[in-house]
Length: 282
Image (cartoon, rainbow, N blue to C red; front, side):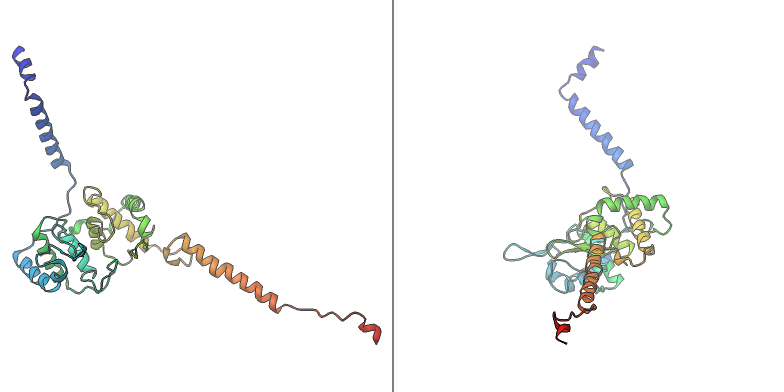
């Protein structure tokens, strides 16, 4: 017992205890950490084809090696793509945001310039430069069979993190500096997932450690469920919200009533009084 007590007071005892605790924490994290939505490794042929496409269509803005290009005033002409991962390329190119047609505060969605195969090849090349978010697997994009509990959970995540910009039904909205939160109407499940995963434009990044792949699927299920709902109240107004509804009521409702009141006042029956003394003269 005396020997054991002496070892406990050894100067290295605390260091060994800390190292042991860190090792246990690392093992527990590896065992219980959420699984990332990663896709299969790309082939060398896809990487080489993606490199050729990149040099022709992307290097003028992002540099020959995707390291980015800065202006003479230390501005950012084309950001670095090192570490953005295949998911960012698949989103930006797959939605037509890249390549940009012209310089603007935000790249809008448009018809893609590249085919699905070319987009996959570009993503494979960028992914080969440094680790980054991968294109999600199909199991995290299958939202059609989601349960009511899963849709409700996705709604909680969406209302907490997304409605400030995208509106409660994903209709989008204006942001400062000429930017805007785009509508989610007609956006594929894969691109919604990749947007959460990579944070394009001014959107924050919701990595798999922040919102797990299963929860991202629940968010997608909620968005699609809201978009499929009919307008039980008649004219929905695009789901923009109460502010737009109030403006509509004031302009067309109150404005119409005011205009109708003015028309009545202008075209109402008017009685003509006889001048005083007119009957006496006769």
